[in-house]
Image 1 (cartoon, rainbow, N blue to C red):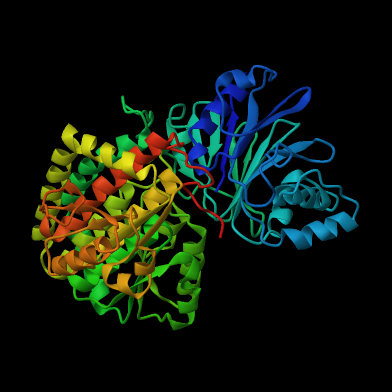
Image 2: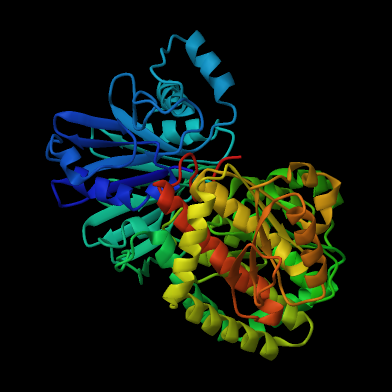
Length: 589
């Protein structure tokens, strides 16, 4: 869940380039950061706690043509300067950074302590450093020592290290690794976006490969240690600069980009959808899976498969889906959703499913991800870079894709694309109306003073209200509780009292009357009802009007929920694009 970056080339200000790259990776973690550069005098490091600063932080670095950097989301070890990466070898012959988690680090650490190693940090990363040192005693070269040490690590890890001899090594198992090229300049990173400003071509490093950079890029198979040729030639990088384009934050910019993402989906070709639709129809059991916001998107996709496609689909949460592993069969189909395509707890389930011979389909936003490579049916969101840690346009893309898939199963692909096109136009009209933003800001002023916020939905709106809860929790750091309206009377009704805010998402479908009944129940106890609906009702204390888009109404209701979370966070003065304690790409369980 961290980000790694390296530069090897002709510019003697390597540290500045590395810091610039890290700033483009900090959505992956921003607890602390560090840089290590190598020149003829050795390796120089600088580490800091907190978000990555401006370039003046690297003025003290010596001239160097090579180095590595790291931005951290803490997993093992508190957020302190000693725990920040990179970590030095005992003799300072190399410095190493890591993205991932060593699941057996405690056993390895115990053995290393017995052998006389002294640890300066609490991290599992320092364990990797000393395992390499120990292997170096047995192997003739650092290259062989790294290969041997890496095979002793359990869990998903990608490491990168720079040596005093001005070489860079990187090894991948699970967590992403890409290489960028621009003439003699070479970049290694967790994400192409970080070096897109500098590089012209890129290469995705396969799982189980190690890279050695010493004038050129050499690839090695970690399992057998043999050098191997590129499976594919480097491809041209198509995206480069990512800016806020005049918006205050990436979150609000990316919400405004949602209509464009949906419009692109509305222009999809039928064949890829039809291919998966046919496989779904043949499957014995169909599952959808994701984590966090994507887990909720997976639940909404399952809803569409059931309600529109008439498919018996079950949604799973990545972290808790292992209980289904023994139920998977080769006749089943699993649809995995992920923004990054590297979500660790989902990948763990996919690996178990793969062992059972289950068919896997995936929908991700990151080309070349491990999830995509594991899949029999591969689909890309094509939502473009999403810099804000909180998912907005990618969530909409996942849900819209699932809706169109369900319509395809029903034989209504053309109707589905038309409905998504109308939805895109409708959301565009909603977003460009300043009155809507002013109304949401007024409601945010009410919610600023509240500690608990409840959200109710039913049928097509239930999962969307769950996602609204996630956004409020992430953005406002407030307690949110989303539940199906029918469950209200079974337990949450005890928490209804004067002044408690209850946000209700109401679609004009068969469940509208039930939601109005729930509103009556909470208002009788003094709750203040904030309704997102197409029609005003005297039972609403506050009314957020939206257009009635019928089957896609849930996706319409999502937009004011995202905006409300944004304005709430803004009024509270919270870090909007980088909420505390979370990262966008979760590569640890």
